[in-house]
Image 1 (cartoon, rainbow, N blue to C red):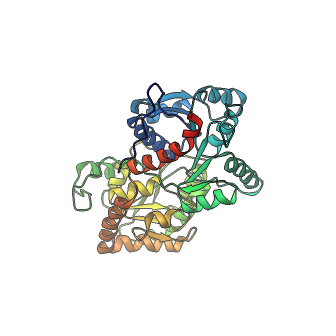
Image 2 (cartoon, helix red, strand yellow):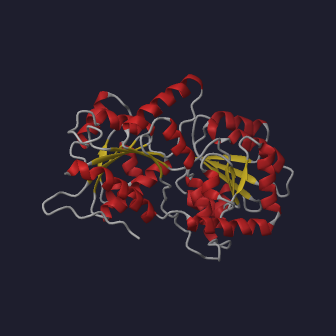
Image 3 (cartoon, rainbow, N blue to C red):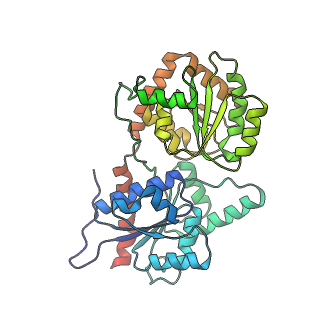
Length: 389
């Protein structure tokens, strides 16, 4: 049932919430756009503060939100810009660690409320950083500061909620988020996939996978994504007939080392850079791959299961609770297990078809966008009402 915020008394302005994004990962940015649309539809005034380029990519103003460009930096100019945007906010909702740090700084000196001494700060942790050594220690210090500054800290997976509690959050809650359903997922077959779609064949031809299986991974080319393990597994797939093509869509600091390995080891792998047509790539793929060291509610997993594409993923973070038995789960860093899971899917049509069907059923069980907005709006009502009296 849709949650509708209580209408404000006559003459009282609507609830005003400021949504703060930092670097804006694909998942958190898509979530904020969906959340903004749902809140505006329920009569909430929404301001989105984020780097300028994100409005061009996600068009927050198109769903009725105000947009204020605020750089990702934490310098005084950026903090002042954010403070001005929050000047009349009833509640601030920061998405991610660095956005939360800037928001806490910006809220200093605000008019008092009973608990925090400022407008309530809600923080959503969509993911966690993959720092090591000294950077990891600094990261934990920042997490503790954010956890203690927030009125409510929402984690998108159970392990993030546990991490928030261990960091000192006074109120940490599970808040599984919904992403907008990918375009092109309305059923064409019982599991929603049209194998004869001309667009699918066109995409496969462009990638060079007309007469061979297509395996797809999507994500930034960073060390924690597990692409080294994926390249190790690709050695085993060279023994298959026909040899599958692995396509990795994304950019990042590891592009050079990965490309050198692909060429030196003659691997059937293509790096295709950052793509805006991931739904088309998924529609063309036979198997999706997610070999990461850690994930919460992965956007690729969301899109793959909705699209009826079997997924092989690592059993890490929030993935087991997100995917259940609707995907092949393998240990992180285990190239033989990854290779074997993909080989089984390609050689067993019955198993492949079952995962397609099970994946769509699992996706149908996830919270909807309306569910997500209702849960978050209930948190807003709980926190903001004392501030608005």
